[in-house]
Length: 144
Image 1 (tube, one colour):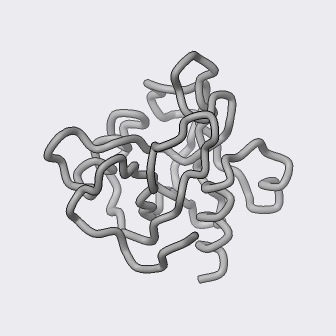
Image 2 (cartoon, rainbow, N blue to C red):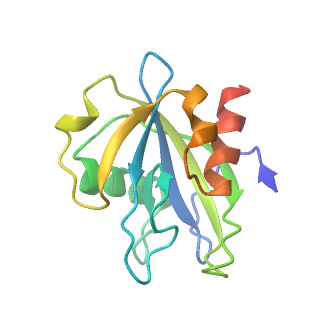
Image 3 (cartoon, rainbow, N blue to C red):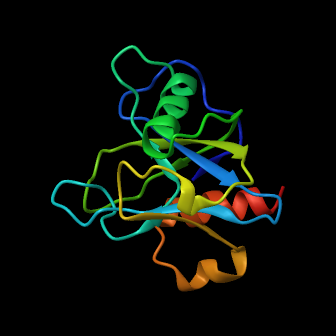
């Protein structure tokens, strides 16, 4: 289920955050998630994101996660909220999706989590291993 309203600033329990970062060619910055015990969606490509710290707003959480995981500080806009639908980690809750733009080289970013960062055109997305919530968010973003 998709809520097309921007995410509320009050942090709902278990709400995650994720950033759809695009470049001027319309490609999406994704990172290959570690395949380690306890991580959601191990071995999948997904946008950068995470969870708010206690008392942290969703806006602050996504800005922090993006900076911590990629070194990027870019303007972000609340876009939508999607359900995670992760049977491996039930109860993780919805994900507040933000959008932003950056036109640099993904290989130049400092990678602090995951295996690698890469920009992908939408034509390649069907061949990638993406979480369902990620596909849903990208498809919704493409329809705007």
